[in-house]
Length: 152
Image (cartoon, rainbow, N blue to C red; front, top):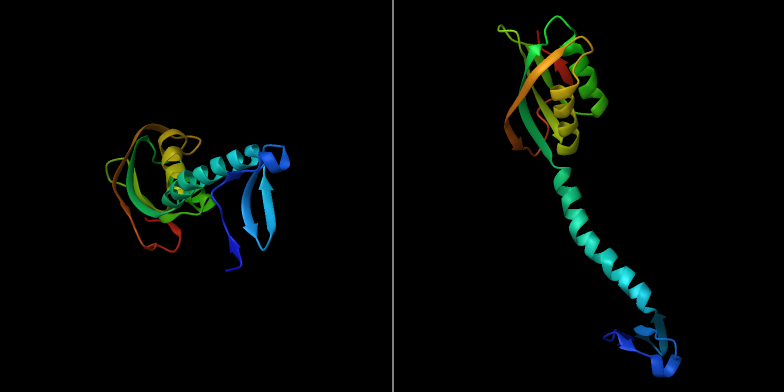
């Protein structure tokens, strides 16, 4: 046994500076200030919270959508395809017989959310969006499409 970690032990009597022994190995002592230990603790706590949230935010999802308003004959499908490709998601978009646009988006959830917001608020320059509905959201293990296509 070449080293031992000790419970953080004050060494103020020895050093006189309020430092703590963090690691004792073969006669070597690694001293850390209280400030450094607090920073390290905060960092480790953040990692426990932020990393799982990031991992969850990057899972693949699939969601169906339908957009209502003036969304046909205003290049809405073309702009949706371009925005989807720009964001790196896959899926499809098509006009319906009753004047809406529908489709499916698949990709990392953070990118899918960006396209959902674009479909709700932005659309093509000449469109007027009344509302966008999203349904059938689910986690997927792999993408079911290779590209973002316009279906005619």
